[in-house]
Length: 272
Ligand SMILES: Nc1ncnc2c1ncn2[C@@H]1O[C@H](COP(=O)(O)OP(=O)(O)OP(=O)(O)O)[C@@H](O)[C@H]1O
Image (tube, rainbow, N blue to C red; front, top):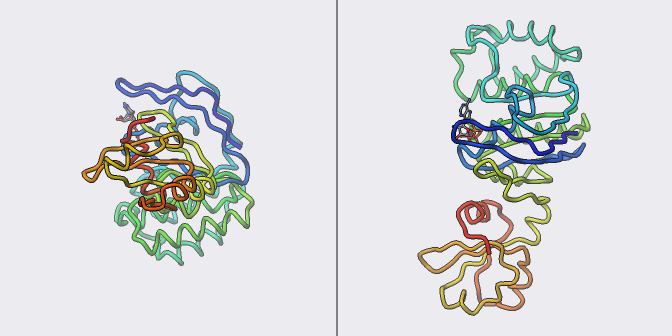
């Protein structure tokens, strides 16, 4: 659905370099710290940023629903004004669906969007992305600024959308639990480079984080350790063979099943 081959985009002191494949029917998550290059990647995919090198293949714009931090609409527009623009922009704009989402999320049609709270703006951005029956959703931090309940509601809507529209989603978030519960595939990006790509099932079933004292670490078979990070108590170690360590070192603590615990080691740890 999206094919990115050796993309390169440089700013003064930052370079994004990556290749990615986003298969049809899959929800792919991108996670990374502030400034890692997520928005640069999304804007490059959408052609908003001219790229320096590489090749990007994406579907027709009519088939893409987008959430970026800026809607692209003037904040002096009301939602009704935006509706008129969407009708002209998207051949398959579904006005009834748009209004039903606005009602569900308490988005007033007649107020200028500059009077909206951060959460209301975020909800409107998502509604805009979801209401022209897009086959591909490209969502940059769609849940930023939303409270926990609304975040969960948005994630449920995305899951429903996947089932009904048989679509593909590329989504970024700072909130790893959002991605963990939604995505099939995960890329971790750091300083403009992809440092890990794994299926979510593999991450959750095989990976784990060992919490060991210095003495335990010295005695550990390190063949299946990927990264290690110093801690006040000793070391945190990322493994992709959790079972090996739980069987052979039954007394050590192994945290599992949460990418939250793995990401800091990937980003700050030392590769073995
Ligand atoms: N138009 C620009 N001109 C110069 N530098 C830029 C521009 N846009 C982004 N950058 C730089 O590129 C780097 C990556 O920024 P980007 O917005 O892609 O990160 P991000 O992962 O989306 O971060 P965040 O999570 O904070 O939104 C940053 O160092 C940023 O300062």
